[in-house]
Image 1 (cartoon, rainbow, N blue to C red):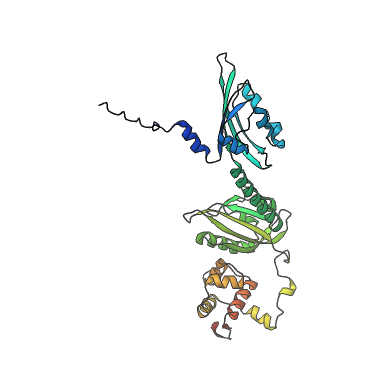
Image 2: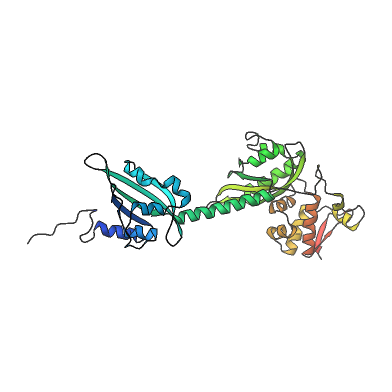
Length: 359
């Protein structure tokens, strides 16, 4: 009895031809094939190509018919494909077509030429991919990008991107605002454009955000390219990798209206001396009072920050007795009012250490 021959590794099993492979690929609906004698007009198209073009498989396919389906706006650049093949050159093009049902599709067409015995182009064969989904995804991304740019242009004076370690990366708008060069703003050079009285506080806020991978939100004055200091609210957040590490920082600097050139609050915003509000403004909370008040009310730093409309990094500085950064009066007032509304009373008695008790 004659033994059965073993199938070679990598060889197709008997009864499973290359035609089966092509059908399996074409059934995805995203690929089709063609072959033709380049000296004629007719070509042989696979079922997958008919499906991509939206044609009845009984339709006779010709080069002219296929070229007529190319989108009018792409005709000038891609209507020469058959002429290119007949000159002996391969084709690799991406273009739009309009199918008989008036729907539009994006196609990627790769084709090669085979020479005849006379050395002239004789046969052509090609593969067509439907890449409409990729283009729709890209268009959606571009639309989101355009919307973001429009929003930034309408609301922000500066959009910035910093490296994972917090150092400047992409800040062309900051350079335009301040007149600093790329080299000048590197490292902590960007702080040179911040008002001297605001630098230590600004650096502390940024350092805290970077060290704790926390959102950044602070106000400072910027020396603009025209020589005038203007107030800006800078806020940003880390962009994280899947493993939780920081990929980069992104943020904006928003112009703060209603401030004077030197940063003093408008006169109507300052409580008159001797009034109840003036007394509150003059009674400066100390770190231990804020920590005790949070303990009494049960508020977390995140909750208190949200109620007072300040950043968590600001609260960290307010509760740190060793912090050299002096908080603004309006920030302290906002924190105090938020805590008082939560149910505490702050005590300021002459000759005694400030305290806090449940209201």
